[in-house]
Amino acid sequence: MKKNKLVFFTLLIAFLILCFGTVKLNNLHATNDLPKLESIALDKTGSNGKLAELTLKTNPPQMPQSMKVYKVINPELQLADIRETANKLKINSNVEERNIDFRVFSADGDYIVDRSTGSFSYMTQDFTMSTDPISILNNKEYVNLAKNFLQEKGLFKEEAFFKSINEHTVTSKVYGKEVTKPFMVEVMFSRNLNNYTWTGVGPKISVYFGDHGKVIGAASVWRDVEEFEDYPLISPQQAIEQIEKGNATVFLENVYEATGEIENIELIYLNKPLGYEQKYVIPHYMFQGHTSTGHKFKTITCAVPQRYIMEIPHKDNKVESTPRMERKLTPDAPDEY
Image (cartoon, rainbow, N blue to C red; front, top):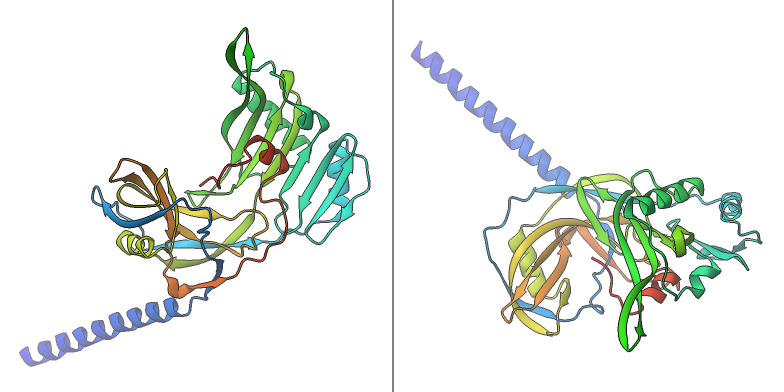
């Protein structure tokens, strides 16, 4: 009897080991079968410096071992749809088809649609000429007006949520004193992805207002996506090592090279500027903190192991990385992040 029990437990243990090993091998096989993700290397040219050494101020938060990667959906833009939206915007003119965009220009305004993403830029003559202080509405009115405008013109996105209201100001002298007043109000909508912040250059839809709540422009930097695959993530410590090796985008205040102390760790999705052929939306780590001399820093590095990343060169498609109105408002502004 004892011998039979021994044989039974021996066979049971062998069976469990075999099952566990099979599951483990299957998981390993599945991970190794993940396709490489084409991605343009993180931009270093906009960086203000380098973080030579980083330390964690506190214990890192618990991070997931994997996250969903999303695939960018190329829009199917039709000439008739471009013309219909232009008519809704009261821009009655011929649609010019170019390799990179559709353009409709008239005396009443301009409407430009990016072919690869569907992002748009709408600018009236009032926007171009706006420099004088304006009468301001309350925030709730602006949000309602912006959303109604986008929905009426067919420019709103179902996933979009209200993010912020920004006053663009002009400073003038009144009786010898400098007075700052708004000359334009921007209402911005954004979106998240998989309950994580999606940031970078957008995604965003903005509506611009002149005097007494009049819409004078609108613009978007937007990509539609679909779920692709779950990919493993590196640890925060491995991400720090990548940053110290220079494989990251770094934003520093008035310092070129520094040591830093990380105060906040966040997983984000990264959106590229217009003109970048972004095929996938990939998880990234974003670290924030202070240098040893007290300067703020922010740095971003890829959270997916490098063995799954296939870096491709950026092809300059000669599109406006931000809408023309934003170049006017903030000509020297860096990427948002």
